[in-house]
Amino acid sequence: MVKMGKKNVEKYGLLLFVLLSFEMQAQEKASVEKSIFGIQAGLVGIYVNNETKLSNTIALRSEAGLKTTNWGISNFYREKPIIPLVLTVEPRWYFNIKRLYAKGLRIENNAAMSLSLMIRHNAGWCMLLGKQPSNIEFIPTIAYRFNIGKHFNFEMGGGMGYQYAFTSIEEEKNYWAFNIVLRIGYVF
Image (cartoon, rainbow, N blue to C red; front, side, top):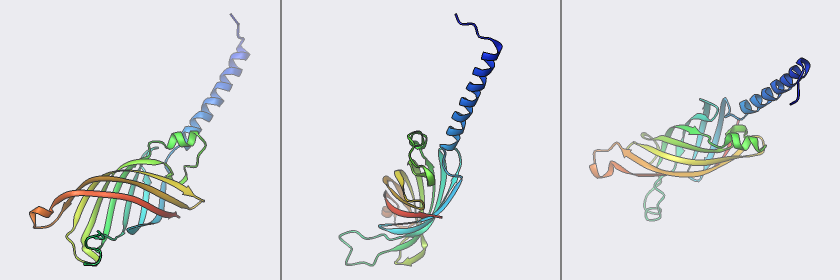
């Protein structure tokens, strides 16, 4: 058995303390951003968004934008598109942000995979074009965002959920809702 003197214990204790403090700092850096503000444009809309940190892996995304709907193949030539104001609140869990950071990959601007519950209100009372009753959607979504340079990013993903329309027609109140995410964005 090796005997350790008081000086050896102090040296190894100091070394252990320094190593643990570096490890603790590394874990603190593997976190979502405190607050990010950006714009995104996709196949069906343009959005202004903000993500606020709730914990190291969870952020609350709030978003407002204009989304084109009613572009189905059967009614593409018959009806004009509908463009409502869209308001979204979405808690996001970035479940692999620590693993990406540990691999040395860039996680700035929350560039990671996320699971979320999107709560989206399509405001029929504020239409840029067309007429449609207001509705609310609850859509579990999985998405992945990665950085393109310092300020640009690309986000892709999707989900399927439930939609409730505020209409007097009983047959049109409840139906499936889909969320397809293909967006390019800029973070300020």
